[in-house]
Image (cartoon, rainbow, N blue to C red):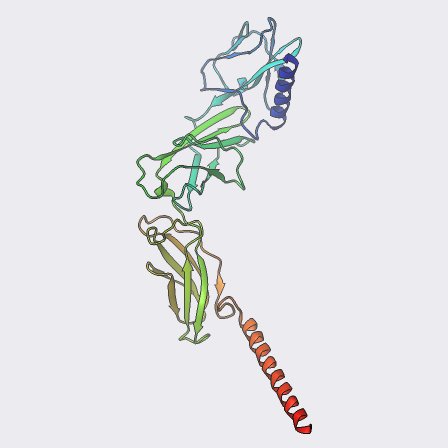
Amino acid sequence: MVWLIRFTLLFCLCIMNMSALNFFPEKFEIAERHASITLTCRTDKDVITWRREDANTIENISQSEFEILSGWNLTVIDLQEDLTGNYTCWSDSGLEDYTYLLLDKSKETTAFNINCTAETFSCMEKIKCTWTTNDFTDEFAFRLRNTRDNGDWVSQPVDGVFFLQHSTNSFSEESERMLITGEAASTCCYMKTEQMFYLRDIIKPANPNISICTIKNEGSDNQIVELEVEPPSTWPQPHSFFPLKHQIEYEIRHDGKLKTKEWEEGSKFKVRGSITKLRGRCRDLLLLSQWSEWSEWKNVTDGEKGGRSKGQRKKTRNKKKNKINKKTKQRNKNKKQQHLN
């Protein structure tokens, strides 16, 4: 059993040495600048040796003014960057324990921000959060958690985005702000920040689904494009209880200028005039949330009518015409054959 514990410790240490900046260590202590802190080696050995490993070196620790040894304890005095790193304790049998000592710079930095959005009020969908900082120039680990709902730490982002669970009820008023906690760590330093907000304040719907129903007087100055705009699939239902405000942006055919129109009721909308393309976005009507991202551009004059281009519609018409001509020729042939008989 002792051999297994020691092997596990050594294996974890190897992982931490190779990728210490990719995820948080299981054991770490933090202290502010100029503070003193005591580390304890968890072992039953009487004689141990301490070592400190930073990003560049590994050195044995001996009694000094800033590092005081006492049995299984090591007290670090007047903490600075040069005293941070991975502290390990060793016996004749090998590695016994380790602790990362990091300088807490949470009060020293301001360039550490968390930005969160939610596509819907539903707790079935996760909150999306990103973070930025200018203080850590080296590699570092970062993690987030929803502290209000006692959520787990999330340390593996997807394309730079952290997805956090929440328990907010879509149909009731929020009584408590959400608390998102973020922690960052490098080989020497640690930072912590917190953001508080109501879910309703970070709502940013996904972009809507837009389809072109009909195009009348196509290509002329009297062109009329009828659109149908559907809420994004993640938006809560019933839609009458969670209404959306829509905005359409379109390009004028003659001069390439962009214009916008907004409407609040109904899923269908008409755009008059000669336009070449359009796109849409939406936001919560009652809470005046953030606008969604724009949908992709949809071509009008060269493009889409019921999902088919001009070329596709012409091809369909020619196909129908050829089919009719073929049937007519076959009927005439049959009549001629009957007449001969």
